[in-house]
Image (cartoon, rainbow, N blue to C red):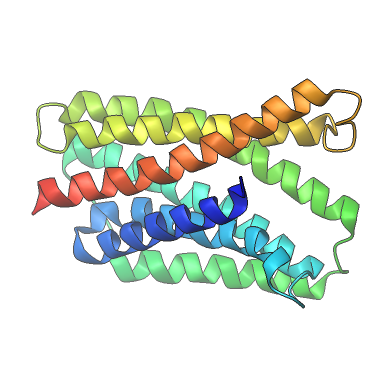
Length: 228
């Protein structure tokens, strides 16, 4: 089974749904939905490189990893905002500021990559481990944050949507956590010595990726229906 093509297709759908949702709903959803849209970009860049001749340059791969890290930070900020909103019904800023700030961070990251030496294999591996560590840690933070949000909004029509988001981050934790395990222990190089550990971790990562993308799309479709 070609997991890469399946994952690209599913994240493409999830990304389009989440971005469309961010345009058509209140400011409180902007950071959350934009963060999930950035997952699409962060995933498509490294996944698509093998299929795009001439794109396998280190800076492109590094930017894919960095955008992925930015995405989890943006959505984490979004859930923190929603938690405050669910308690106080107060929210600052507007959509344009969120979009501009995110674009600014991405452009700044690109400049940083371009003005520094070309990332070699070891540098890219370090960036990957740092990115995965952020994903794993912030996934756990978001699970707890969303649990608190659900307690505040469980009686509203959108309450069940946050249960789906909790499922999303459980899947993301399995996906990124398995990838982190493979990278930290170099199982991709030691696959012949530890075939079961490598194959099982890779399977959990791929399945977690697919389930996360399906859950993201499902969550936003459910919320869009409830908020009409």
